[in-house]
Length: 288
Image 1: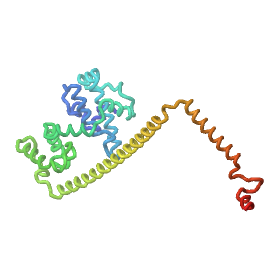
Image 2: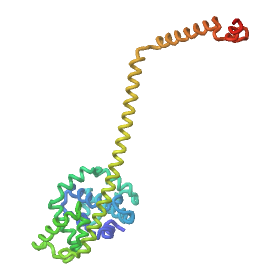
Image 3: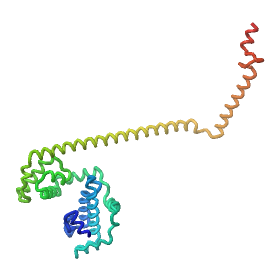
Image 4: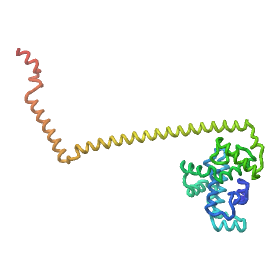
């Protein structure tokens, strides 16, 4: 099966520009941005276990499409004749190769990166277009909009209602009753679900914070131990550091000589050793 057939199978589109929501005149930076955005949705590490197999195939197809559009010759051939040269693809079947390519292109995201992007995204024209697209694809289903628009939660529903109703009044989008007259039970189920998920997130964050605090305590304790050990070594060096090997030898030799003299004196006085096999105490008693 060719790449275009796979595009249609997994993304429902044979036109690779439309698949990435790009114009044919898109610049390389626009192609890279579109590829990154879509690849995050199908990345095998970001989906549930049940969806991994399908996501893996989508990720491979998407990566091949990006390779075509990022190569001037292959892109030119596709633009002119609608043909894709598949000779230069990365070894088939090796997901690790595609993931390695992806990791080389995009740096690892930090919490700060996500937070900064959220600030620039919320309330932007891009967010409005994403709302519109999700509204049309889901035929007014708010659950669909909540799932597809980044950073959205139930607190944003009043803002969503306002923006979509403005679009409806302006004739930008048709009115779907499921949106304008959503059943109360459906709305309640969604709010209950988000409340439950929020508690789970709080528990996870609390656990991470606890683990980080424990790790911090262990590091501080180890640093304190190391500091105490270094302090002890400094004191020992300060006390004995001035002695060379000759000094130490002379000190030991003097101690040994003193011990020999003391031992010799004890033998001369006979105290408190035996005298003719009788203890000194008994001899003294006989004399008395």
